[in-house]
Image (tube, rainbow, N blue to C red; front, side, top):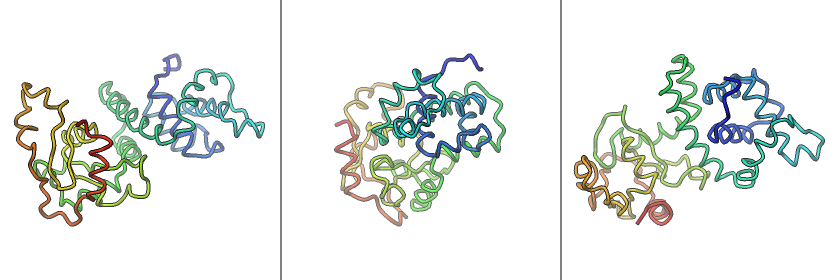
Amino acid sequence: MANKPWTRDEFIVTLDLYFRMSYTRFSKTNPDVKKLSQLIGRTPSSASMRLCNYMSCDPELRARNIVGLEAGRKQCMPYWEEFANDKAKLRRAAVQSRQRLIEKVAEENLNVYTTQWDDLSEEMFDTKFQAIVLNNYKSHCAVSGIKVPEVLMGCHIIPFAENEEESMKADNGLCLTVLYAKAYLDGLIGIDQDYKIHISDDLKSHQMERGYAANFKKYDGESLNLRDVTIRPNPDFLKWHMNSVYRM
């Protein structure tokens, strides 16, 4: 494991953690460092050292004669230059990297105990926001209407990285199945200010694929299923998504 080359995803999630905690807490015994090591499939010592490598890239620390571990600076510097001055971009990239790394852990069947996995999942996803959205929708999908909590998730309309102030509000969330949440976040489907569902041309290009008609075509132009919803999605937020994410 020690000789395994670091991947881009590993560098990104480590840098994301770097900016979330003080450099004085980069010890291998720190719980957050341990969680990071579980996610990337490395030892806590390795994760701690990489965080200290990023210290050597930090001009604010270097100005104070705190240089970190210089040995890995060359490997870390490209990621520092890409993300250090654009934290929103880093957060978006880190979300995607975490998802890929979690899927990789599952595929490789690594030895992660159930309690550890629960802690890791809670760290990777905002469980408070999930609870807010699912409670607001009484645990039903706003597209299909299905009421099976195990396949539902809360989906931001405006991502946390774009608007932290609105990120935890019920009117900034949609309750969707994983299928529709993925399509919405990728801009394959959109919802306008009148709560009408739109299917993008990119998705329509797959209309001959099995499952397209049942899962997508039937909902094109239909209204969101907002029965029993306490707080409806904010039309201004839906407009932002249509203009900024949806693939016309």
